[in-house]
Image (tube, rainbow, N blue to C red; front, side, top):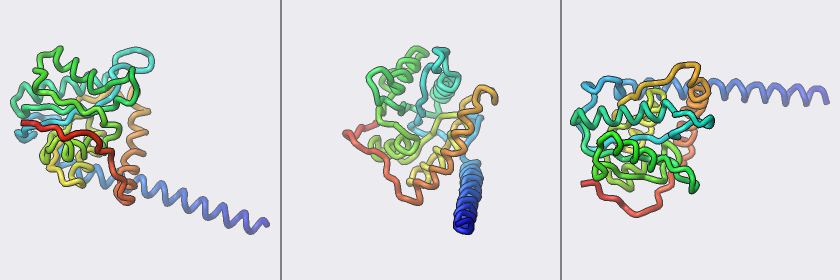
Amino acid sequence: MKKIIKNIFKIFLLLMVAGIIFIAWANYSIKKNSEAYISYNIADIPETKTALLLGTSKNLNSGLPNAYFYNRIQAAIDLYRSGKIKYIIVSGDNSTKDYNEPEDMLLTLMKYGIPQDSIFLDHAGFRTLDSVVRAKEVFGQIRLIIISQKFHNERAVFLAKENGIDAFGYNAKDVSKYAGFKTNVREYLAKAKAYYDLLLGVEPKLGGDKILIP
């Protein structure tokens, strides 16, 4: 009995080590494969018709403003005003009646002077994979500037390129390491899941009518 327990423990330990190695490798690979395509500098970003603004909550659970949200909004405004893009797809979660990331992004962008007819809403961006692939399959875009924080853009650009999209990432300003600790830990695991989904051929949700961007 003791021998069986010992062998089970060894197998468990090996699986745990293999999992840690896989997570570390996935993070390294995604960062390395995307680093040439993301930048904080608008001058590095090619002129492209459409940007994809990835959603997050407008406010934290405490009710305070979410710096991730407002920094992404500012990045989208800066990119639009620079003339590098003409249209913005705002893609995020709208899974409940009282939670609507795309609508929040639309209203905030309009508040800062971005014309409504330059903004397209994707209410089914439940995951980064969904947002990226829907930009191609629903909105017909095969070339994109993706707007989010650097850690998120690394994964988003990687997923876009794996799905046949010529993608670049414009990095929004990050938040402090202390404030973003949980988010960064979650992203470390999310990069591993991105590879896991690719290996398993996980498909995004693509429901809804096609939306034409001029």
